[in-house]
Length: 185
Image 1 (cartoon, rainbow, N blue to C red):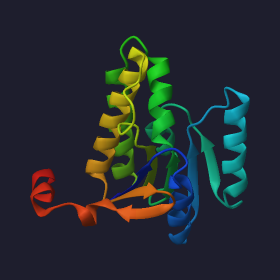
Image 2: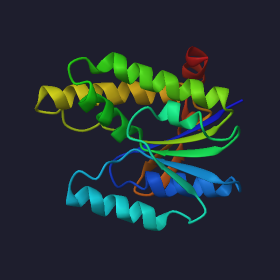
Image 3: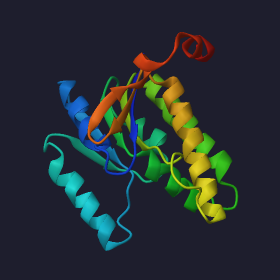
Image 4: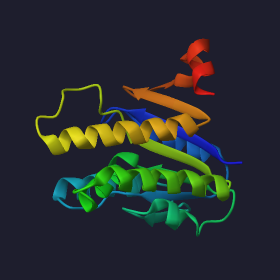
C-alpha cells in the first residue's frame, strides 16, 4: 500500500529541505524526481543548489512530464521524492496550453495510480499559490487554479500533509476538525 506525504507552503518556505529530511529519515534508498527545467540563469542556480544539497547516494530522475510513467521503472516500495508538483503542473500547462485541464488530470491520475501500484513512499513538494494576489493575466489564473486542484487531489490521497511556513513544519491532518475529516473519508 502506497504511502503519500505532501509538503506545501510558499516560495522559499523550507518545503524542499524538510521533504528531503523526511526522505532521509526513511533509511532506504531515495529516488529524487526533479521536474524543473533550466530555462534561465536563475533557474539554473536553483537547480544547482538542490543538486548540491542532495545526498550522493540518492538516484536522480529529471522528469519534466509524465512522472507516473517514469516511476513505473523504479523498484516496488521505493521512497520517491517529487520536487515539485508546482513545476510539473507548469510543464503540463505549457505543453497543453490550448486545453491543459485534461492533461493535468491525466498526469495526477497516473502519478497516484503508479504510487499505489508500485507501493511507493511518495513524498510530494508543492507550492501553495492560492493565498496571494489574483494573477493579472489569464494564463496565470488558469495555472493557479490547475495547481490548486492538483494539490487538493494529491493531498486528499495523502496519508500525511505538512504546511511549511518560515521553515517550521505543521502537520495539517492533526489540525483538521472532526467534521472535515469525516467529509473527506
